[in-house]
Image 1: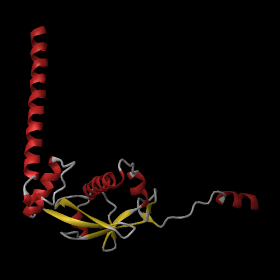
Image 2 (image 1 turned 120 degrees about the vertical axis):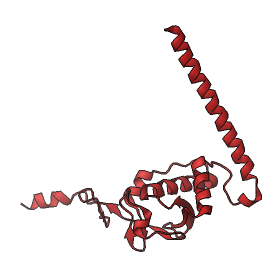
Image 3 (image 1 turned 90 degrees about the vertical axis):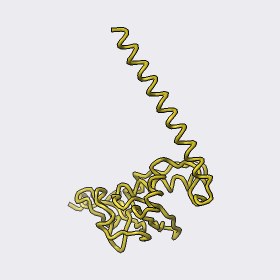
Image 4 (image 1 turned 180 degrees about the horizontal axis):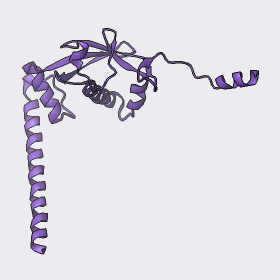
Amino acid sequence: MDTSSSSSSSKHEIDGVNREKARQRMESLLSTLLQDPILSDVPKHSLSVSDVDVLINLELGSAIRLSILKMDNTSFEIAVLNSATVRDLKVAIRKKVNEMEQESMGHRHISWRHVWANYCLTHDGAKLIDENSLLSAYGIRNNSKLEFLPYVTSRLHQKHSRRRKHRFFHGLSKKCRT
């Protein structure tokens, strides 16, 4: 029994060492690739394997580049796969904005729950609300422009509605009249 548990633990140690070596090889390969002048426009820091996959698919035509217009009329670009959903788009936006904030201001926490509860993305007037729907269902293609709008979801209907001002004593005025 001890021999099987010791061989099992040594197997896990070997797997861990192999994974670490593979990760180190992948990082060295990425750093070597990023030194190529052809890839000068690729961000050098915080690049993951999934980011490289999206960039490769962008070159092959299997991914799209989108322009996101913020409320302050500034914009940034992101790339997602052609088969991306609204959820994938939100993840890509979150990652890009966090990287931009890190570069400009250092560590800063953004409450993405608050952002998505109070703003939605739109494309040609269509609100991208259903997180499981494909971007292509909204007519989003390469070089499409998306923008943020200040809308919130109503909890009953899961639809975006105009934001109402909170009235603290709204219910009290009706009770006092009777």
